[in-house]
Amino acid sequence: MTAYDRLRFGGPTTRQTWVDRPREEFLTPVPPIWPLTTERLVLRPFESEDGEAFVEAWADEAWTSMLLTRPMNRAEVVEMMRRRTTPGSGEVVGLAVVHDGEVVGDVMLHLQGTGLSEAEIGWTMLPQHGGRGYATEAAAALIRLGFEHYGLRRVVANLDARNERSAALCERLGMRREVHRLGDFWSKGRWTDSYEYALLAEEWRAAQA
Ligand SMILES: CC(C)(COP(=O)(O)OP(=O)(O)OC[C@H]1O[C@@H](n2cnc3c(N)ncnc32)[C@H](O)[C@@H]1OP(=O)(O)O)[C@@H](O)C(=O)NCCC(=O)NCCS
Image (tube, rainbow, N blue to C red):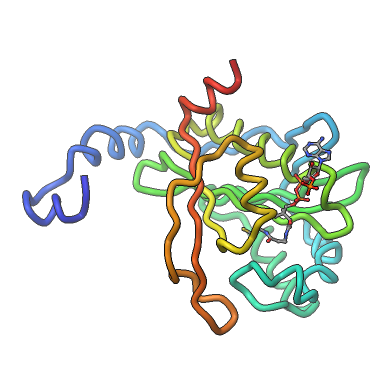
């Protein structure tokens, strides 16, 4: 059902009636029990001191080149971390990824839509901690949380089509490249293509079996 159907028929779409409204009524996001732990990692809510770990990476033009924001200075990183530690509606789950007591990156799940049945996942791994599978391990734990705790139907990732490492990560996680959008990301003064990767709950369950 699309916005066009709503305009054509008036009133709620069948998806709103059968999916979004029952979920809205009965599913209030309840915070999971933190932290999440994996074989090598601890995933926990941000703490204000975490900003320091990200200062160098966010100042790096190469590391930020595939992100939609320009490099950030220390004050901006600290401000970002202040926003991330402010309790919100519970629809954005942002976690520091910690290995052996050291912050090595972050992962994020943004619950979306009226009935919060979908979520966008995002990730950054600090450059000195890349290439060890930490992003894969952390994102896999977050996807599990999305399907098992939040009861999601679909998890998506949106990325600059030039971001080969992020695309490889999506594929390691079993996500499918569903969409190749032409020239829809405005990044650092130019339009670039983007990919949307997706994973349905039933696909994830089948892969766990
Ligand atoms: C995107 C990003 C998170 C990917 O990080 P990554 O280091 O490639 O991903 P992982 O931590 O899962 O590591 C995977 C690598 O470790 C290797 N590896 C080692 N041990 C592993 C394990 N136990 N499990 C999985 N992979 C393992 C993999 O083979 C892979 O190696 P390769 O890069 O040579 O193919 C990272 O490049 C990044 O933060 N970039 C900058 C910010 C950014 O662009 N964010 C995404 C915006 S969409």
